[in-house]
Image (cartoon, rainbow, N blue to C red; front, side, top):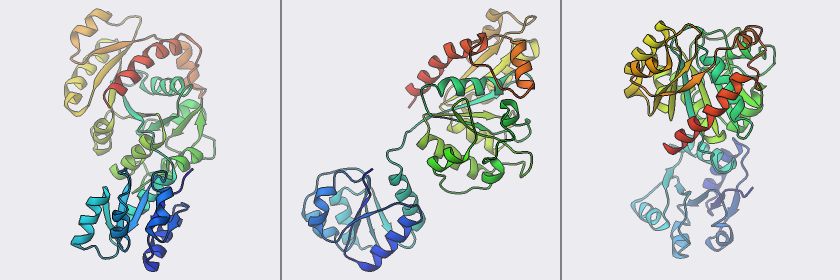
Length: 349
């Protein structure tokens, strides 16, 4: 992978930038004169132009490109003008911009961001099957993509229990719940337990039972940068974390049973959440004695995306901690629905 390029002959500035790069194990190619930067200018994932050589680099009239940053310790009005000439996207004045530059260097060391899709899934009532659907959707998508499944509800019993991976020694929310700042997608994928090809972040048996908005935002950022799909299994509470999940998702799906109470809850929640979501839809889990499909659609303000079959064997598997089966009628229904859900989410980008 090409390395970031730094163009500078300022020893103090070079030392500072290399120190920041080393904090993220990112190697930087150094050019101490403008001419030495020419061959790597277009290929480097990030170009840092020191204020000391900005005038000479601008004089080369390099081709316009993204990801150029002018960096220095004292930025003058003339430096700002040179940044415009270079087409720089940012001017970083150290030491104030150190945190920003650390994150920017880390991003460049991971290659181009994935810009993945985020989907939030919420139950309209206990037993509707939102977590089962979230896990099945994630596993189905993981057959062709990199998927992150996140348990946002600390009081729901844990997705790791449902999937039978609670004994796996790996990272849980207890390790990340107070995280602030950038999370590396590659490190996250290596640290998390896996089920069905899906990276799973859930709650362990101990540790904090609350989640800060900063931690969830950092996690969603990592999901968007490093995974094709991030599935958030969110609680039925309007706290700060839920509000954030609803706002960041390209699509929010309410999973409702077709019972009278389930449909009534879906109607109420649809009205409440509609203006909080980029796109809101309802999946109806058929109940043998439930409301007819035509009547369900008439009662809901949000569109009905489809139906999920009731599966007693699925319920038994999940209660036993075996996780959803991926080759039964339920999984086939999720597969049919998945294409439409993810394609419509992609169209919202």
